[in-house]
Each structure stands twice: as structure tokens, then as C-alpha cells.
Length: 115
Image (cartoon, rainbow, N blue to C red):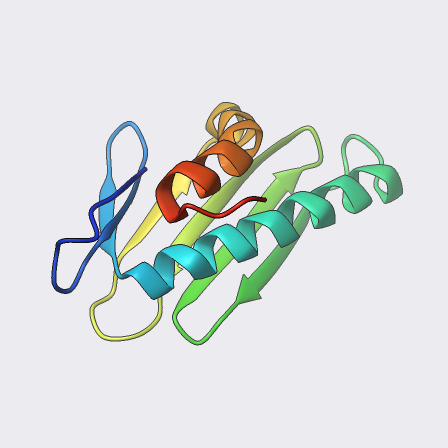
């Protein structure tokens, strides 16, 4: 994940081991907001579902879509751009755990805001 405010169009970068998507600053802000909401939703689902019960859920803004699916203890996240160009990427469960743990610090460092 990265941010370069000097760039004219795509200031942000989302990525995984084998993919990367350049995103606008607004899409990056949407990603942080959707990821925070998804973390809460995943916690709620984990309490409601049994370990072998699969789920799928989507959160979306006008610019970005964040989806989660799988088992409560083994799911993945998928991010898709909605406007203009089409791009998508998927984080596996291990990456989701790392991403969720790092979100507050990344938001603070990249966007210069306190979580």
C-alpha cells in the first residue's frame, strides 16, 4: 500500500503478492472506510456463524467495492474499482489478517489522519 500526493490522477496503490492497482486519493479513502466497516462485519459474522458455514458480503461506495467470502476463519477479501477503468485484486486470509492489523497505522501514515 502506498500514497504519492504529487501524482496527478492515481495517488494511491493497493496490492498483494502478485497484483497492484493504482487508485485515486478518493478511492484510497473509500478503501480505508470500507476496510474498517468490513473488519467490524467480519467480527460480527464470526460470532454468528459456525466454523464451517460459508458467507459472502459486499460493501460498496460510488468508486470502490470491497467483498469478503469464505469461512469465518478462512476468508478472502476482493477489492474492485467501480468507475472508469476496471481493476480488481484479492487478498487471501493471511494477507487479510496482516492488512487488518496494519490499517490504523497505514491510514495515519498515508492520509495523515488519526484513526
